[in-house]
Length: 328
Image (tube, rainbow, N blue to C red; front, side):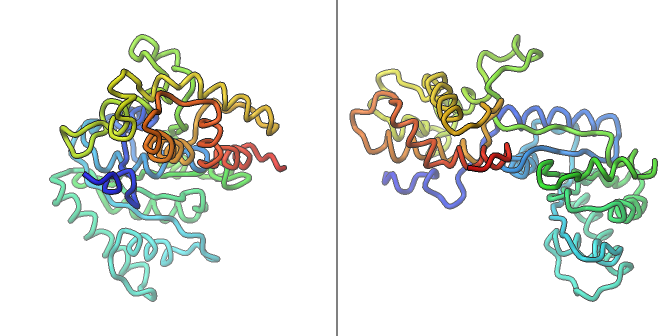
């Protein structure tokens, strides 16, 4: 097999379940079970929120019952009218629709689409993902109440809002403070703080897990991600063949990588983050496997210089500087 055919070289690298995604799925499942109308997935930009929602859509283990899924991205128009938001959602879920359609026409189109998705999924509840929800204003939420009111329990419409907490100076919290009870109670009660891969095992998980999120992310490449599926070599074995046969696993370098991150943050005037943003972690693994281990037949484990190179190439400092709002 030609290594260039490996999925890691694909335009869209394979997604994999991380502990932050599992935590989100558990909270979302509980929210659905108790019959709540919405769920807010909140966190820093580049933490992996949108990909987490995509993984939840693609997987079923976390679901308490059958669910339909639709997905849209909130716009940021000059005027947040009823006609605009309903047209925006219709086109966002992938339907052809006139840009001049009335609010009534768009609402009817949405209603049919939600009912059709419920039928397709054999579900009594349809989850509508609204990404970039930080762009929504109070008036938008009032319009979404109208959409939700069109449905009873069969099918039931549930909103999953994905909101970047560091995108706006005030964001959703400022809306929550002025929203009337019928809006606040629907859309701001159930919230999940989404993180990157945590460096420490949460206290409540220490009896269940033997490693932190970062190490478990590496372990996925060492043990579970395979190509060809399902019986091909693991991703680590494919690129670090000799080292893997001699017992090497990427997870073994977790502490060494953490030391280099601490040193890098100190030199850049950055606080050491409690988590590793997925937007940096994923390319770090790609670089380590394809450009370092995959090009060195004598590779036996990461050196300090190799880790520094991979951190720089994966833009670790750049993302942290913007997240911490530190300019240099």
